[in-house]
Image (cartoon, rainbow, N blue to C red; front, side, top):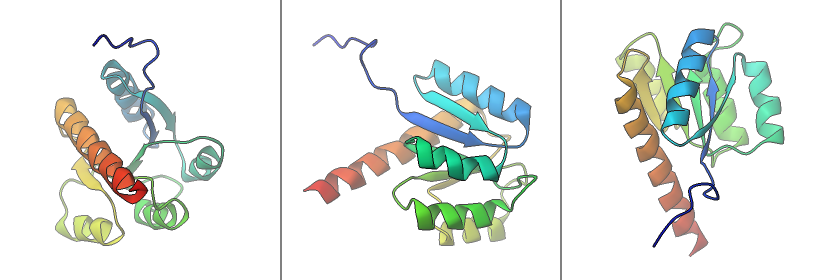
Length: 139
């Protein structure tokens, strides 16, 4: 079977990171991997963006300039429980932060220093799990 990549719907990812270079880097790399990516730099923009557009995944910086990432995660999971969230942090693998993120139902937790191919693998894992959960609920 031949798949026309022009008509194939790309999975949409929203990156929320107040460091412009991180957002631009993730956008450029994830787009080369076949995703459609939008980037915003603050939590205020996140709420309005999710009100007007659908995303299959949110990649959320833990330390935003205008908000605590864990509080944003909690709000996201309350308002949009079906949207998976991958926490991306420059604070490394802090066990307490990771536990709290998992308690608040983060779907993944990664350091900003991770190699981009590993990040993409985690994105694909989360999206695969999310799609499997949706299909199971439809049955």
